[in-house]
Image (cartoon, helix red, strand yellow):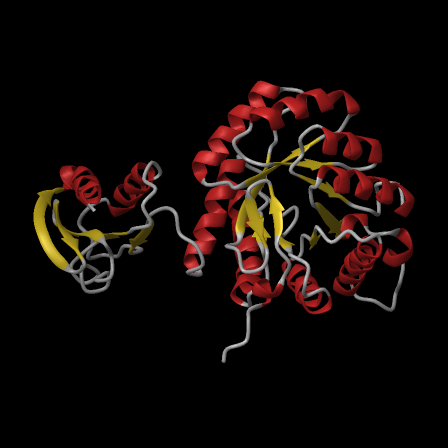
Length: 354
């Protein structure tokens, strides 16, 4: 009998109505970047994120004066809202009372274990989980100074020690993250955590991954390794960009690994001298039109008959282009021939029939 994957062995934690851990589908997260005191802007961003497939959203509360806004956002949000709090346990405690679906704290900067215990008590009272979030840039000074440990060991040790403390307080509704901006440090850390605290759900991510292109490459490299190994109960791809792009990247990664699908996948060739249409522009137009489609279908946009129905025979729908025209096909079978200017409309029409 095949042994269980690591993310099937973790405890179940509920973030609002979203299950995390114990074999639940890896949940997609993002973080709001609107001003924390602007209720309208945050709710508008949440709506866009929800449309893109976000399942859990995190909101920073940098000041006590933002708590009223946070409460209003929680009350109106279609997604569970996680309170992200640093340096001030009182804010975390108040957020738990004002509708947070989960708290995210770093015990290393929240004021020590005594303050952490106050946050634990508030979460217990509110019946919400806590994410213990450890980052390479904010390790405890004593642990950070140890020369006998590599950075992944420091991160894993820090997170595991905090988990032990939480469990000694009788609090088990925990999710853990331990992130670094270096891909292989992140991978090594989460491998250690999966082995050392196998019952605790893991939130995976490469922190400070960078702008859109670099951030997606770094995140997909590291998180793809972990997810393929069965490590990770929820994820965020952190980008210096529109948070909606984070959600799109998460779903694209999960689909590429055959873990979850919610939107179309484009199969397109890189073009060559045989191509007699503007395939790059064509593929981009198809991609843009497909953003409003929520079917998990495979759509092929191929430049010639060499890479046509044969290479993309498993596509649900596709086009193989010739000189100024294209042949629309489904599951490798020809449906009709259309002029180049009608290809996108024809593809969308056939997708509408699926």
